[in-house]
Length: 124
Image (cartoon, rainbow, N blue to C red):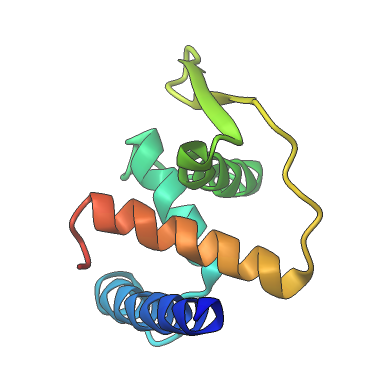
């Protein structure tokens, strides 16, 4: 029975992930499919709230980090701490991320991203 639940959950996650990618590709992509890093970047950009500001290369990496912290916050790994003088959100690490195999990492991040967009009602 437990295996069935996981298969059902994984199937629902895949359906929601595919729907999310389709929506984001329509809105933000110029032909290339957005990957996990790209979605994390968009979350970071959204959380920063400076959508029309030109970003430097280091900023792009920081935006992905903000995206990771934001989507993993509900899992108890991070907690929002403060905004700095430039408006960047900072997070406190509450619990070290578990050692996961690459496939497990991907599932955790996709699940967290889907949860983020479900909460914001971009997908159902």
